[in-house]
Amino acid sequence: PGWVLALRNGLSNLGLPDEFLERLFSRWAGSGSGQRLEIPQARGSVDAVAGQAFFIPLYELFLTYGGIFRLNFGPKSFLIISDPDIAKHILKNNSRAYSKGILAEILEFVMGKGLIPADGELWRVRRRAIVPALHQKYVAAMINLFGEASFRLCEKLDAAASDGEDVEMESLFSRLTLDIIGKAVFNYEFDSLTHDNGIVEAVYVALREAEMRSTSPIPTWEIPIWKDISPRQRKVSEALKLINTTLDDLIAICKRMVEQEELRFHEEYMNEQDPSILHFLLASGDDVSSKQLRDDLMTMLIAGHETSAAVLTWTFYLLSKAPEVVAKLQDEVDSVLGDRSPTIEDMKKLKYTTRVINESLRLYPQPPVLIRRSLEDDVLGKYPIKRGEDIFISVWNLHRSPKHWVDAESFNPERWPLDGPNPNESNQNFSYLPFGGGPRKCIGDMFATFETVVATAMLIRRFNFQIALGAPPVEMTTGATIHTTKGLKMTVTAISSGAPKEDQQDEISTAAHQSQQVTG
Ligand code: HEM
Image (cartoon, rainbow, N blue to C red; front, side):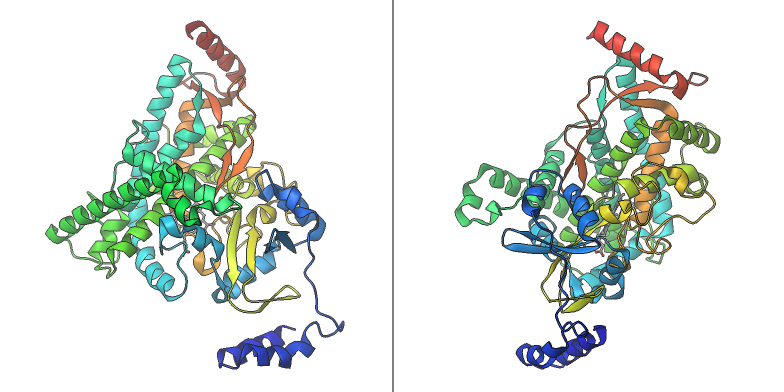
């Protein structure tokens, strides 16, 4: 029972040896039935999981084995959690008893001890330093940045639409969100929507490596000689070196700016020319090594880049199959924004657009699983667990659980009433947790929601989007976020004012294809 474990943990914290406690408490284990309660173990699982986006077979196993089960994968064993109460216990009620486990080990090479992998006191100190940087005034300034970057994407799409060329939206969204996060975090203009350069490529090399490491069963990068001679690993080291030098330069430039400025630091401090998080941290006198600062900046770059890009990719995929939702979106955007750029006040008014993002995050949570490791013995539901268990909380399963959702698989923004609260883990009792929950909840939740709302609104008022004729089927694969296997190829048609919208879309896109064939 829980109180026995609590007592045991208390005595262990007082310094009593584990072997002694083990003997003393063994008679209580599984008391009642007379035997220890065993967590259901998934069978035949290794074959089922290999070779596809791993969270898909985990869903089937969840339907068979329930909200907590064990999965053996070679010599490793994982607990898979798909139960909202257990998720809440791990992430919130007893969060101190859990670390980031394997995730921290995998991401160490790129994030070091940045905010995502960090644990314990270091995490507490860094979180306290960084969170205040994302204050209200900062977020309001970011809305302009989202608008400007989305406008540049619109220009690109305009050119493609008038040339009758199809576009690959997944990579464009990735570039859009890279441009945004570079400015937002350390005032760097990647300008990746306009052109490629060494640093953009270096960021992608690092990201792909992080994704490869999180899904690879054999850690080849740890083999001593291999890691020095493998061309791939050499490329990764060079990319990281370039990123680190660039970050060091940006930190130095920003330090000089802070020294020269006359602004006094206060709660809503922001330099108008450079509203970045880095500038806030330096101006606040954040007393931190440059390595730690770099790790935190790199962490935010990665955390805020591919997540938002994936949300936009899957939102536009979902919209391509839901013309009635698109029509409602376009009506809302026309009446709230017209031709203007969005402002912070508009964020409250773009209610339906926000619901579309909420619903897209339910169906395609980024990342689809959260990773933890138990730091002490605990009880999950009715099952005692040991210290050192690796745990996957499947947000994918929680968000699609037939127990909690009506028509769980269907894209239905209307399931979230417009006059209701914005859905989050608290008001949905951990059945919905797109930004995690508890003390390790995402610090960029509002930033990311507004970013994806602005981009969606600005694109949808100018263009109609359809899956391109002859495009490869849109299937999922996974790294840290859910990617498509072969991109999201779309036909984009400009909506000129007074021109037909969704209902005449078919004719328009057929015409675009014909013109492409003729010109191409
Ligand atoms: C943590 C999702 C955008 C920075 C998280 C977590 C989730 C998440 C689920 C919790 C991870 C866990 O508990 O293991 C998302 C999604 C985003 C997004 C879906 C976009 C739609 C951003 C942005 C930033 C950011 C834009 C940066 C400004 C972070 C950081 C953490 C985090 C630093 C770690 C917090 C901590 O451990 O204390 N995010 N995120 N995220 N996110 Fe986000």
